[in-house]
Image (cartoon, rainbow, N blue to C red; front, side, top):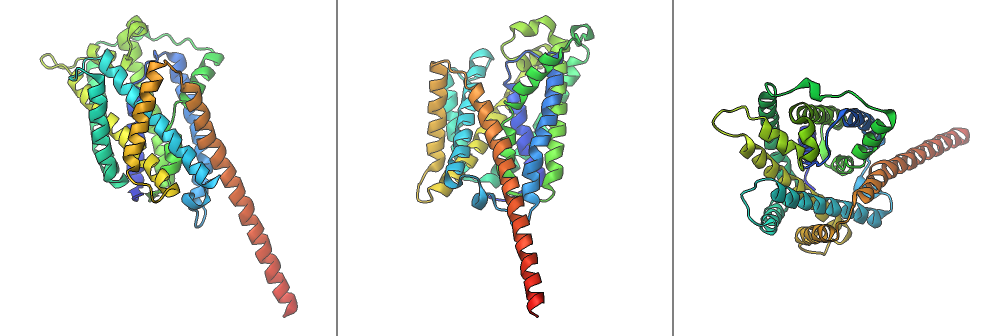
Length: 350
């Protein structure tokens, strides 16, 4: 994969998170907001072994990944499943929210074609695209805040939360944060201060989540319980302009983030597959076909893959990096001990 800067690492991850927030069907409340903060703390702890690994001298993920080729295929499988979820989000939004495409299938085909082409340009291309998307994210959130301010009713916010409820929402948020897995892979391609960008991402991810939740709660109130996609419903109720509705801006941001997210998943999955099977051609097309096919199967069979995604995130973003860090640290200590022993032996002989 191409090299990216640490700032591009930040914009890529934040763009992917914003897409998941837009597509969320969960109703916001005080427990969810507290759970998001708890989840952010867990994620920072989970990222420490990753960062510690990349701090070490001559560490190479492609050479030292746990389980070798099988490990690479496991990560590729995760990105394909996540890509299928992204396609599913596109289908869900186009059916529930006004979208200038009559057929969800047409939208999926167009998205797949654009993403395949964008993925063929490599990681550097999508990372530059993410920098532009950061501006659109800031603009859309600013417009939503501007429209929500005069319509917000603080009485809609009920600060009732139980410890069990906060823990439940925290675990759910953690198990839906695929950016952790993406972070582990992208750190291998990032230059500059990767640690600083990682922590900045977690901070701004939490800020973005809390802002959107607060807007949804205070603007929608009880209406949120019947809203299929609270973000778009809150956007419809938060119109800062008297002449032009802001819905089109949110749809543009949604579409562009969808392209960016799927493209990034294609880039990561196809590059990992190519490392395992270097002679295999059209890995991007193959990954896209699997994503679209799996997404269709999930929708037709009404499968709930959230538990699977959660388990994979824990394995790929927590357990494997931690094992790799411990294994490498033990190996370094053994090498240091053997080096000291060799030096001592040479001194005795001399």
